[in-house]
Length: 259
Ligand code: NI
Image 1 (cartoon, rainbow, N blue to C red):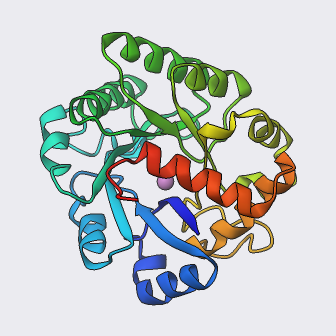
Image 2 (cartoon, protein in one colour):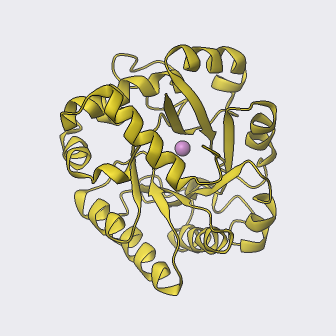
C-alpha cells in the first residue's frame, strides 16, 4: 500500500474529521501517514495524533515561515528534546522560503542549520522545504554534509533540476506532491522522470495542493493515489511497481517507522 510521507494532520481541515480522513485514505490504498510539524510551540499536536493512531507517525520542526515567530527556532537542544519519542521519525519541515520571506533569510538559514544539527545527532532524516532558494539550499546542504553526514528529503519538490541533482548527489531523496499533476509543471515532471528509482517518495502536503482531478478541494492523504498514478505514467512503470518502490524508499529513509 501507499505511504503519504507528508501531511499536516493537525491542521483543522484534516483534524476536524480525522477518522474520516484516515478511513478514506485506507479505502484509497494509503495505509500510513507521516504528520509533519511546523512549529515547536505546537509540536504536541502531530505527536498526539501519532499516539492515537497506529498508522500515523510524526516529525518535529520549525517551518521557515515560522522561523522568526518561534523563540526556539535556532535551538538545537529544543529539537532534540521534542523529538525524543518513539514515533518521531524525522526533523522538519525546515528550510528556506524566499517566495514569501516571512522571516529574515539569515534567521531561516540559522533555524535550518540548527535542525540539521539535531537530525544529525539523532540519526533522523531532515524534511526540507525549499522555495525559490535553490542555490542557497544546495550550498547549505553541501556545507552541512561536510560537518558530518545526515540524510533527508526535498519535500513537495518544486525547485529546479540543479537543486535536485546536488541533493541526490549527497544522498537525499526527492518527494513529489500533487504539483506533479498540474498542467504547468513540465519541469517538475522532468525531474520526476530522471530521479533515481531508489530516491523517490510521494506525499500530499495536505491540506494543500490537491492533485488533479481534486484540484481546488482540500487535500487529504487518500489523494496520494493520484500523484502515485501520475508518477507511474511519467516514468513508464506500473502502479504496483511504483507503490512498492516508493514504500521501500520511505521505510528506508524514515527508518524509525518499523516495516
Ligand atoms: Ni508541508
